[in-house]
Length: 177
Image (cartoon, rainbow, N blue to C red):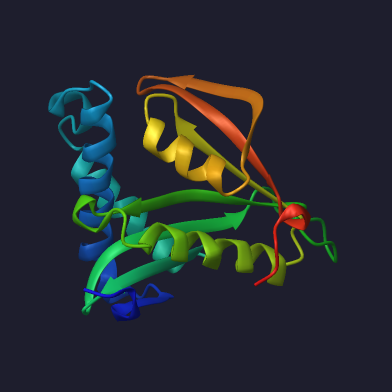
């Protein structure tokens, strides 16, 4: 298949099942590769909670994108301002909360296209900085982001899933396409 078969578009409520499935499969791929067990990844009730969360996000002001390959959702991205801006002020940073690709579509440019859409979101929203957090054990994602100009910023978050590293992106330092 050629990347010309790839379409990036806004997610709609009818995409909910596909979005939840891409999230679940992508998450399983990186956590299992990082040494986590299936039971740790999806404890009882987590699938229902994930579905509720995504349903809420699709109704919110957050931007959810779908990557379609031959009319199948194979990737998703979730982005929103980091903090609500004060009245009349632009947000200083936009968070890339999720960028998930089905393993069967790794290396086909899906992640690159979703990332480019995120950078365009930052630029069109006049947000000079991108932020994200990445699970410490996900070396593939850390490398992906590093190749696109992301830098570790020294912050981290620790929770029951492990350590998450914070990264920042200086949009002005990126080439304009």
